[in-house]
Length: 345
Ligand code: NCD
Ligand code: ZN
Image 1 (cartoon, rainbow, N blue to C red):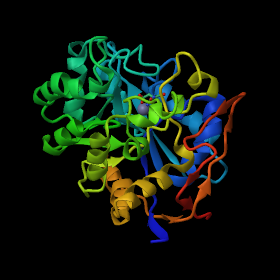
Image 2 (image 1 turned 30 degrees about the vertical axis):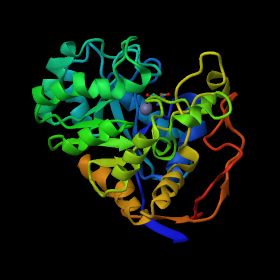
Image 3 (image 1 turned 90 degrees about the vertical axis):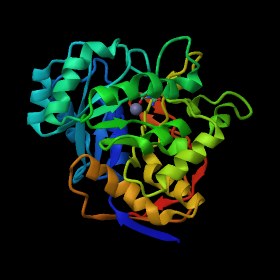
Image 4 (image 1 turned 180 degrees about the horizontal axis):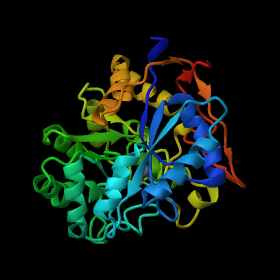
């Protein structure tokens, strides 16, 4: 297949940042996707509907002229989020989920939840009004091996959470393990997971091939080859519980190439093209559209997009870097090619 026409996809997990960084990256997503669930881990975090409303306006203002891209906002859950705030979020019409970051789990997560019991009241209210909970599913304790954090979280936190809140809709974000795939497959209705392109295309060897490669460091960290294979199998299985969420997470070059480098890979410049590569690698391009353009919208109770994009099976060169405000952004595959190209409109 040299040409693939699909319904316009959506990105159900995206970091857009703010200010000049936002300005630098939002166009890449807007070119490909109809909508994106925008993460609230700014500094300070987006913890209220008022902050989300202002952030949404900044995103809209940063869009290229004529863009019809729609940002879908999320609230950052803290120990002090109130049921009233959930009601305001529900009523505003542009907030589609509340994000749980275990404190200390990832970039800008220090305001996250330190003890789940403290938010049980808010979760009960979210369950009552049908507000989705989006979870960064990693345990954070220093005694837990970095490669086991997702599995540990599923076993010790998520399983009991699903029992306590049997009707709360939940997305387990950036699934990274075979254990996670197995869990999502067998979970009660109302549970889904997003999958990133990097977790479909790479195992953890990528972080260490010939030296340490900070641009392959993201959270959850890349896992073993059997995990990658299980994720690819899940993404291409036409199971509506698995859908597209890039977790494209830009950081300036100096923050990545650093003695204590930040977690996050920037993939928005070629996001849908990279998923096409992954699906083509197992001869399953016929299932890309459902994963990218149907299942996420269905889970969020939103209409599917109605226009289309076309992908061409032609190598496309990725620049060595992009401008990122005053800094530089090193994209995934910098200086190399991606096997697919978005046909210009
Ligand atoms: C994300 C970021 O940089 O905001 N980093 C990452 O490695 N994925 C945060 C996150 O989603 O964990
Ligand atoms: Zn993320």
